Amino acid sequence: MRVIRAVAAMQRLADRLRSGGRLGFVPTMGHLHEGHLSLVRICRKHSDFVVVSIFVNPTQFGPDEDLRQYPRDFGRDRGLLDREGTDVIFYPSAEAMYPAGFATYVRVEELTQGLCGRFRPVHFQGVTTVVAKLFNIVRPDLAVFGQKDAQQAFVIRRMARDLDFGTKIIIAPTIREPDGLAMSSRNCYLTRAQRMQAPVLYRSLKLGRRLVQEGEQNPATVKRRMRQVIKKESGARMQYIEIVDTEELKPVKRIKGRVLIALAAFLGRTRLIDNIIVRLRNNRQERQGRQERKTTDKHR
Ligand code: PAF
Image: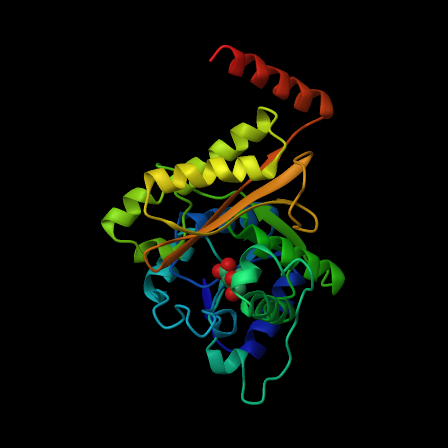
């Protein structure tokens, strides 16, 4: 496994690798966990060479966010990636990625306005700028992102399409702890008490999914029931719960087809996000769910 720090050296090596097979790429900010490693495994399955980048990208953090505390442990990450059979780690410095005079940003409109974008105004512009730069450096045939950061994955897919990067974007399932908490580098900020409460977020998402599958079509009802569970079982402070379509990420008025139920909440000062995609296969199934729900309600 090679570790490359300079942009030009990474470009040269990526060009060489690409001439010998499919080049897969997993961008990360390091402090790797099983979620990241699952992305590397998926990448490996679809490509001949795997490049993983580790770069804590300053432009995607707001002024009051956790850039300085963000956990970093290159030695540990390097060992984990070596064991996964990674071919190259790209590990640039902030100066290499953003040299003096840097003044160009990439912004995806619309998709970045709602959900996390509403509360983190500079975040997605930072993500798309750094990912565009990384794609230009590595020029991968495919890149893998986790569904845990669903809005990020959808925004990057749109950027890759709109700007003709020619990189296939694979969105991989969220990896969870045994109690359901979505794996995240930020989970290490949680106190013991907060860590015990955190799985309520996924429980509320599963409740939301169940209600929808049973035929509930009113997003306000689903969100209210989810909030109730979170409030009852934890001290979490909700930032948002939204039910949006999976194309434009706009809140739906009536739940049908395929929707994303997404939330963000603070446990203490730690902001956690999670989501679930619910797909209703057809109208007949929706009607059947509603019918079954009515019958169950009658017998309660
Ligand atoms: O998901 C992340 O770790 C980051 O947002 C990414 C995609 C590596 C860009 O900095």
